[in-house]
Image (cartoon, rainbow, N blue to C red; front, side, top):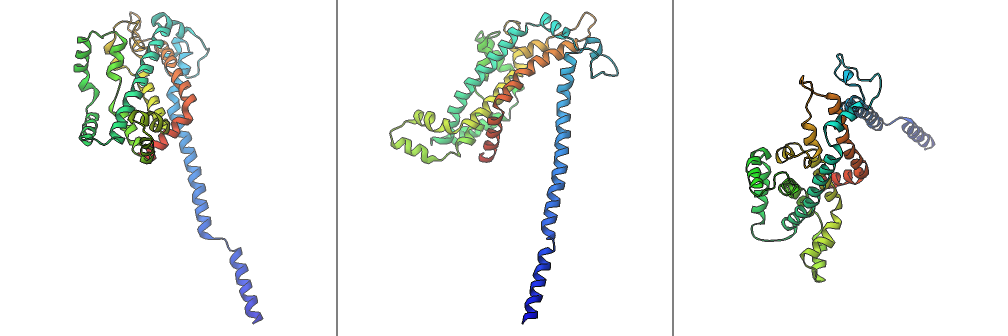
Length: 302
């Protein structure tokens, strides 16, 4: 009996000392995966950051070095002459203000109109709701370029060319924003609506006090997408404006021309691109935490 007990103890001791192959394999796989993912992410980040780095260095390089071949990525001296040339060709401050007003007003109006439409499609039962939503999804399949001419004709007939109204009103609402918010609104518990209606709240009260406070991540995500998209938009402002005092910055930079020889001022263009990038980078740094949270929550709940 004693020998049997001692043998069992020795077997248990050896088993405890023997490493678990399954656990070791899992840990090894995890380590290899981490060592594979991190360098891959670093390479991807370097490749995506390279164009921005070229723009930054080119903006502070002399024009002769920007056009040199082979390219000289590190300037021999840092200069501000490209920014001087930019301000001489383009009213940077005025057009930056135009871009801020254009993108800001479109974003604010889209937040109001898109959220109201999304609330109606997600939380209110009415006849034809599915048909309306289906039509909106179908409209998403139509490229903007196909609608550009009729929209321009309507705006021109209203006398809104070269005006803020002509830039903003056709962009005041969009189907993508309605779809994004609608997918988020349908995930919110309906018990909140029922409790508010029992207390006598109307639809606008439920929308303002119940739905919107719980949809801040989705609203912030949509707002950032709208602001960046309209700040960087080129085609619509370029068509709708011919006066430099009304034109946004991106359209103004697109009209930069070279000298009589036809050589484009690449250094000046890089300086203008850097000026256009900086406000977006600052905005993203301010809201990045909420933005990532909103994208994650919208993706999980959609």
